[in-house]
Image (cartoon, rainbow, N blue to C red):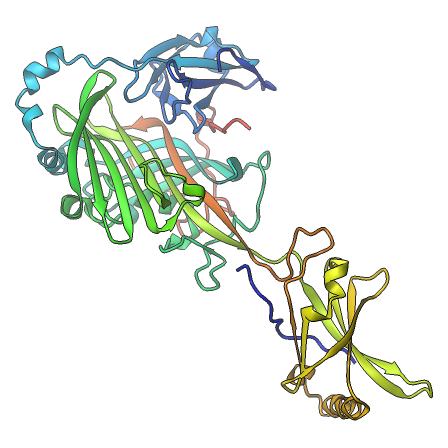
Length: 537
């Protein structure tokens, strides 16, 4: 004589010195800081001199280099936009500590550049951007090349890395004259789910726009067959300048100038090359977007592009401001950097794509089942009944005993509850209706008739429960909790091969499958030359 309710009705709410670390013999660790402010220097390039291999610093300025380069007596060359380039002997770095390296802001010496670029400096911001777009075919490779680099995707939860997935990939790009998504092939050298960091299975699930359990609010993020790297690649607006990339850049060669206003800021430099700094923005009734382009004086090559989009309908809590001094919540932020190589062309250095998403966490406190318990009369027959609710956790005692927290109906008519009690040593509450003898008899006959005809008892009874708390007072009944996350996908180039042939063995990544689920790996003979720049814990 047990029935389970199909649904329950309730309210849904809806540093100055080095720091000691545990050392690993295989890597030397470092952290880059601004010499004036002490702030981490993010996405700086750390190369092994004369070996064309290296890494990009993490969000906290950290990086790691295999100790074999120390044994070989190599030098590190460190560069970042707006900072003086620095060379450091690896032999001077400790394998036991986090080596703190401080970079000084660069002084822009335009003594030679000004002479040759006086006329260029008079160009308007919009004209500089137009020239940069027109020169993409000249400044970027049109023939097949490859980059080998470190890929990762992860979420940040309260500032900590969650669900960190890492890979070493070789990307075979058939040139900027070809459509990237249709022609680029990827070979996986290695991949792993890093279990040293927290694993959150809910946050790791695919986006779910059908049930709205995991979504990018007010935006739609296609899964591209579930492959996170494909999502990242399509957000390189420079590489995909002839196809749609992201709002409001859209198709860069036709829409960037049309959709934004532009202004010039103070010029800067990278590796001794003078760069225009162009800021641009987009105002929309519901959104605001901010971007920066760093464009070469000489050939108008785009060295770096930053773009941030906010939802102005959703405000940051506690009157907080975003980094552009507004109150809108982040939808996505993309940073792409290209570097000039000895052969003159610009090749990808890194791309970082961040988007926020909402995750609805299922209730931790809920009713597992409900039953009807038939009660014996003094004479041994059926004397009445009671409703019994079984929870998955012990309910708060006072709230569970409050009859005002329950609304019971029989065939749509409200039943007054006389007593609500707890079953000893069980996570169960029983409800005794306050009825006349005639009402009791009528309801019992209805129960027996329904059982005889195999009618679902949910057609007779409904129960609404106020959102009481569990015994610990932490979880409200049937409450779905909204959690905000930041999702990151990043690819950092360790080596560029400017002239290469596309392998014909067909051993490439399946773009219709996630990178970290049963993909084939192909490790070259020099596989040990590449490594994962895993963040510090």
